[in-house]
Length: 143
Picture (tube, rainbow, N blue to C red):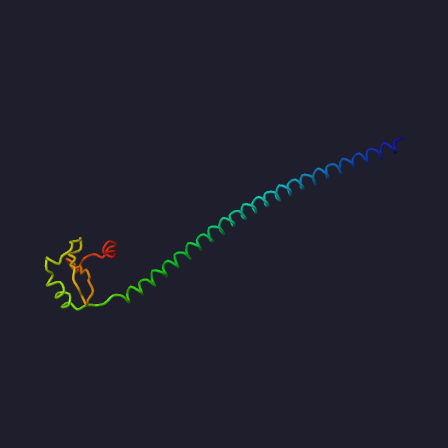
């Protein structure tokens, strides 16, 4: 009986030890599971950020391509327009406007008077600036 009792005590201690080890393993497993879930959550967040960045980059590339195309179109127009312009001598302009006669003045703008005349068989508008030091702002460039 004493031997069985001793054996029972040993088995009970071993069972307690195994139960404690099992509990420790479960705690470690739960801790590892939480770490894995946190890592998955962070990975998902990083993937979402990357997806947003890819979408933003693609949108920026589309805008850049559109702007490049528009810039190229404007440059082509400028080359074309540059080929359409002719240079005139001052004497030709003075003669065509009858020395800037008031009868040929068709308007007065912020930057100077505009005269209608004919140069080399083409009706043109000649703008005479009030001052050489006129600041060339956007309005002036449009005119």
